[in-house]
Amino acid sequence: MPEPFLSIQYVRKSFGATTVVQDFNLDVEAGEFISFLGPSGCGKTTVLRMVAGFEEPSGGRIVIGGKDVTGLKPNQRNIGMVFQAYALFPNLTVAQNIGFGLKVAGVARAEIDSRVAEMLDIIKLPAGEFGARYPYQLSGGQQQRVALARALAPRPKVLLLDEPLSALDAKVRVSLREEIRSIQKKLGITTIFVTHDQEEALSISDRIVVMYGGKAEQVGTAFEIYNRPATRFVAGFVGTLNVLEGRLGNAGKVQVGSGEIALREEPAGGRSGDTVSLALRPEAIALGRRDGDDAVLPGEIADVHFLGSVIRVRVRAGDSIVSLDTFNNPATPPPRIGDKVEISFSSGDVMLLN
Ligand code: ATP
Image 1 (cartoon, rainbow, N blue to C red):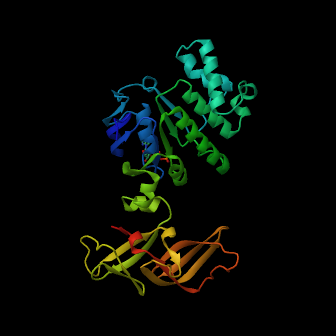
Image 2 (spheres, protein in one colour):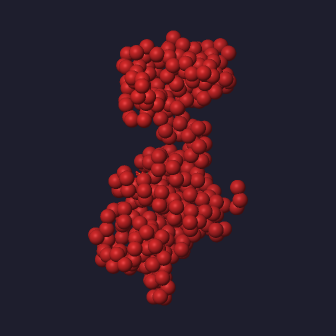
């Protein structure tokens, strides 16, 4: 990786006796879009607030553009921030909100006007229609776009977004996240986006930091995080994961219910008789015997959910229930609860959970 633009090094944060962020390390390249993904309370916002300068780290340092900013105030760091609550100034118009930071910085009037016009153009709110409106005259999505424009107007080097979409309804959320990503790419601004919504993180990020208990569990692209989860937490938190409980036999064989799976590799340190957990994504499993699959288990249909183009089927295999998807075929009726079936998969797709 080239010289990182933003570097978070061994950052810790304690509130009183409680440590909420521990040894957090991350290097972000210039222009990269990073998401912090994790459950409520895992420390996402705290790390973001330390990068912004609203919270002082208990240890470690933060470097932006080659400069140690750990001791600097937020307004000395050249960052723009958007919060979950719209946080616009209610008594200022859209144009005044967007120009606020520039005015505080003493930028000349004409320059403010042209920068505000440029920002309104970027967020696709026509100046003539929206510039003179007050925040209460805007929808939630429009307010968040103005908040984004306000954060970007001073041309910060880093953009920090703290769950900016979580107060919006589902449809606006999806369209605005695409818009944020396209604006970010166009401006090439280094960005950290905090979310607890995995689909959001998977769909728009260059890389994702999955956080749990104040630590970075894994840093990687959506593809890596989903297909090669580094820990059991990541495997379970991102996407749907089927876990098959089995008993280890000899030579990497695992007994699951009345069936048997031959693992590609014997689990390190595993002994015959040990209980093992095998994990599989729904898309790795087929209903029936699929050509090329080397693992076949008997089961029984436990549940069928017709979702439209796909049918999500849950199959009981031994003591485990696995979810898989089949495509809807109008010529064939869907499986029924209680049907005796087989499921198949490739043992190469099995992830062994410790
Ligand atoms: P959410 O998705 O719910 O916003 P988060 O991952 O952003 O969660 P943080 O807001 O970073 O989590 O909080 C991490 C932990 O730190 C939580 O347990 C929280 O209660 C605690 N915490 C945050 N700020 C303070 C504070 N000022 N004083 C004491 N504890 C705090």
